[in-house]
Amino acid sequence: MRTSILAASALLALGLASVACRVEERSGPDPFDVADEEAELAALDIGADEPIADEDELGIPDEGAEDAPLDEYGEPILDASGEVLDNPIPADDGEDGDDGDEYGDDGDDGDEAAEDGGDEDGSDLGTRSLRPAIAPGTIPKGEKRIRIGAKTWRCRQKTKRSCVCKGSPLNCQLPSEQPGRNRYIPPGQVGPIERRGGDKMASIDAIGRWEIANDTPIYDGTGHRRGQPVRGACYEWAGASGAKTKKIDGKTCVKINFGQRKTMKVDGESAKRAYVYAFSVSIAGKLPASSWIPLSKVVRRSELSKMPTVKTPSRSNLSSTSYVVKSAKDWGQSQASFSSAKLPSWAQAKVARGNDSSKRALDYLLRDGNVINLAFHTPGVGGAAADTLFVADDALAFKRARSTADVPTLVRVPVFHRTKKSMIFAYGSIGGRFGWLPLAAFKKGTVRGSVRSKDSCLGRPDGLHCSELAPWSGYFCEGGTVAGGLQCGALTQRCQGLAPNGQSLVCVE
Image 1 (spheres, helix red, strand yellow):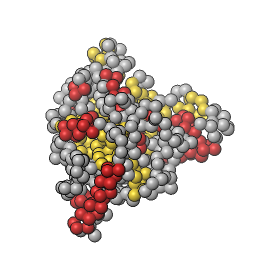
Image 2 (tube, one colour):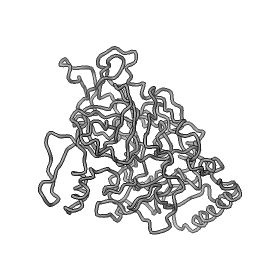
Image 3 (spheres, one colour):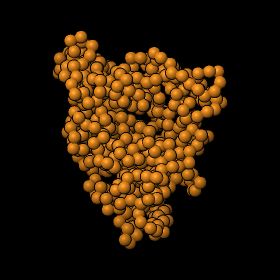
């Protein structure tokens, strides 16, 4: 039964009253620059009626205070000692076990179907989110925007292992029962990793990999070919006991993000196939990459097929403002020579404590290779990618979900930098797949052309063509479709054409 308007208003008033008290109890300086945040929000047409939540209780960011308690696997222990709320979003919301082809065959972002309709259990989440996010007159005097603070919810899926959401019921840990949390380990290796002792995180990193065929290609989330072959080291136990491992020569292995699987049609293929998300690999042993590989290329694919599929839930309360993901041009660079090292100094700063402290702000902005990661959750909750996509000038739309008091979609995370103290992440969709992007990664604007059309074979003769999206690579056209590709030896090199041997590219710095 749907909550009555009167009851909903009463609940909202109670919630806002508690939030107002929390704001009034805050003492000392803000751990973030309110003026800078409000300017960034205003530039994106995000009004004061949309509240901001915190990923965790924020103190003054301090480069020397990045330590956090870790478990035996090196994972940060998220504090769930206070009140943990029931997640208001059904576990199966937006999860049907099959991604479909969100991007369509023509590169259109085609996400309307995923964003229509309410919740399957008949709850009123979709309808409630259409009312004003914060009722007029309820913002405390002197406050421009309600601060939700740091709340904790249970994950939507039931797990034996602790699983929480921080700042928003949409910002959840991956509901994995395995050690390692963000990745899916071959089930047969979980027991040995537990029993052999030693540095368990190191054991997971080495043994928790999946062998793939040596000719495996990698694609972005729209089915664009990024390169071939994928390269990654394989390891095995060095003895019958103990935690020591040794490298296996001649084989290729990858790490797989837990629950990240999709079905799509890629360049050079006539049918949709299943893909899983591989991370921390390289293309031809030269270009770092994380993205989608064919499930069919995994040696023990029947075992990997048992991995649960975990999707981020869809939202229907989208902003009326149009946004596009920022390209190299928006960062004052060219697509041909973009380097994340040239981003502002704060982009090099850390955005998570503990074992996540290696995560930097630039990991969530435009990355080397002109790609962007749509995050499954914010950095301090795990920072894993839900998708990776090529970016070109005004070519990739981001549809932002409006933030409400019951389901915040704006979450603040700390930035350990002397001038920029925080970064706000927004929840929304790219091509129908939902996830988190920092406000700094997108701008107001409309799509002027499809990313997928940039390296198309339509109307082009058979043979090799240098890539527009990835200028250090080239692709072969055959009968109007992409049939293969080659790469230069480094991201700084540029394709000039096919070498006389027909097996490599002519590349220049």
